[in-house]
Image 1 (tube, rainbow, N blue to C red):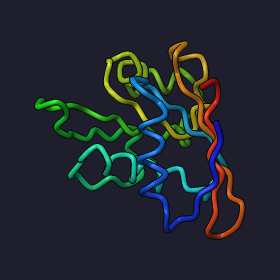
Image 2: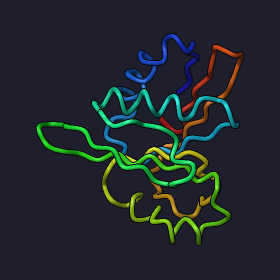
Image 3: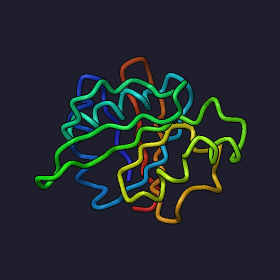
Image 4: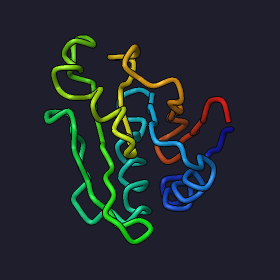
Length: 141
């Protein structure tokens, strides 16, 4: 599945994304620095109803956000593995625990620890087409 969207339509794209992915819980976002991974994840969280500030977890590695879904408190983990050197560091940071928690996990730079992801992980690439346009590709839907 593939879409192109302009930054002024990012909310609509995030809504379309959630509709397309169904019950998937683990999402691996790939793309070059500046492609808009964090910006898109911020919109995904907003659509879910996350009220917390959703900045990049580059230094903390894992941010945990809460939202209300189906009348109960739910959790979204936003992870940025960019600063990690290897899978051992990811394990020490608690990445694997989050990935297998059953909660939604939105992961940037998954290529830093590829062996930790569950088989049902959905791989997404975001490509910068120009300063206002992105291409989002979802593998295997």
